[in-house]
Picture: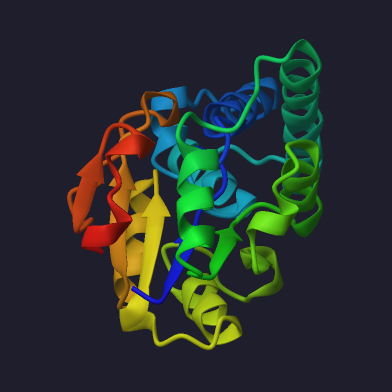
Length: 216
């Protein structure tokens, strides 16, 4: 291993469930009877995919830009409340893992489908910016996870061959993206991220503390 790449939502902080809840509520408000269980399978992808697929399934015409704006408002309200109340913190084990990687001089990055503004907001809120050599958003690329573009781009930024990169993911789509990029993938079975099929990952952990960087 010569570089370690993190997804963000559901890996650095427990926000994946908020994305799912906000997307589901926004679609419901616009007349699409989708459930959270259906939306969970789009975890880790850019916003548009869940909306397009839901519209196709339920054959409901919706103003997608308005739905996305409503989802964003709902999500940010949930996020602000969780931060202000102190409920939202880095996932247990993440600060320690980052410290271990830093001690070993292994470069790290975030490669997320969230916006650049959201990634920066999270790392600044929890004073993690100095822990990462790169903060990469898939929003700048033409294809979202499960396409491998965000991971191959990140490997290029880190000047590290994909085969020498390890990815930490909590979502099925993200695992697919990491493996398609030719990287080793650790699947984090985070219960708040929903029922994610991580079977394509090289390793599966239930706690961040189970990751042994000496064996990667």
